[in-house]
Image 1 (cartoon, rainbow, N blue to C red):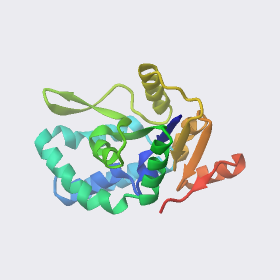
Image 2: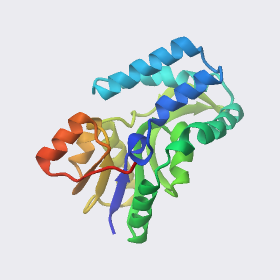
Image 3: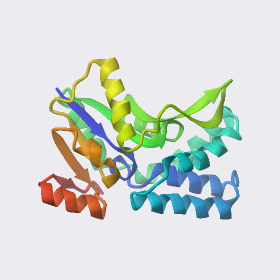
Image 4: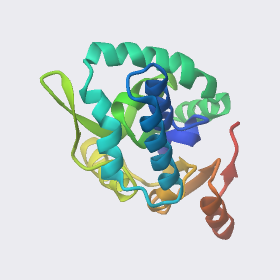
Length: 217
């Protein structure tokens, strides 16, 4: 029995849930479509280049959560799941998750995307454990701020170490599946780093280090 850790966006699913949520919010008129989509694309491109200012991005993407009630957001998220997420659920990814669970491995998703967007997606894959960027909630509403450290790059390791301490789990024999060179610190941490739909930088690193490289599309 070991930990099987998965990144979410472009790994377990065939797209980026945070980017798609921004697209969805623009399409339903919850934000100004022109300005929001332009900034959403800008941050998406910065992430791909490995130079995303995570705090600037979170200020941008969490603001719309603070402007709407939980009931409204949850209703929107149900539509978002149907329109944007269901088409990019990957059966081959689900099969790998199920295989780990059948072996008795504990499955964990760790993602920079915030918990509001990601929790229902992770639940759909039958995964109970999720580490994500935590949007702050006060008096039943999102504040637009982050609670604690963003779960991004080395922040993923901080979140993971705290979770390991709380659960008593170990990284001995652990797997980590990811698509992004932004996750290199995590990939270097585990015994079994596995690249899935790797970006150009990560594909090159995987080749140099003889890491497995998979495609679940």
